Image 1: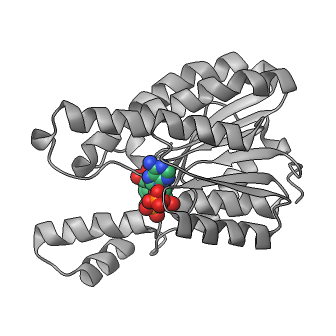
Image 2: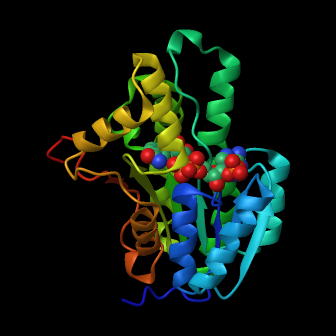
Length: 259
Ligand code: NAP
């Protein structure tokens, strides 16, 4: 299926590894001009090489912290006029809510709520004027089903989701959609560090906990960044213009609700 987005311009934040990289590579395969981002130059350049090999007609890189004002300004400058924005950043650390003060909360809100809001604000009117825009927010299945040790993530991402629900309805007539993708467990560094934390808390070894959790998912496995990227690319496609303001869980069926 031709997704109809060859030649479009995308900024994929936090895309040197994991889910963001999965999105960047999937867009690259469709011939999108991709700007990739991460804080570590070596992994970022290696990921950009993969995107070039995957078919992107042009790949730019911005090595910066996307949660900083300067980082965002640099990313927007390098990426140019955008048709596609994929918001992503590292997730907040796990822990006990009793240990978190304002500093921890402000850091989580900055990374996982205010940063995507700033980037949406900076790009959405240009998309509207050009008549095409796809904004994807990578959030978490915790928006629908909170994870007790990830309270900072539960709170910040729910805030972003609430804000975006209103904006999505204001821009649809101009050809701009905003959707959230809510990952369940995907095999990335982030997942592994979370499992390491849980294993330490309960005094078991990492491999045991990793295998045990895998089996609790209805699919009997973790998701891959490639399948996450494929969903992202479809939501960015020319065919997805009528999918707007949605929060799509991709978790192997882990969320136990009927709807
Ligand atoms: P990951 O494998 O750890 O990859 C994170 C990527 O983001 C890396 O490329 C990292 O590179 C980059 N990054 C992190 N902070 C950044 C920043 N401030 N500025 C620019 N780049 C940054 O994580 P992931 O599993 O792909 O997770 C992506 C998001 O999805 C996170 O918010 C995570 O909480 C959420 N999520 C993941 C899962 C899962 O199962 N994997 C489930 C639910 C939600 P550098 O460190 O070099 O900057």
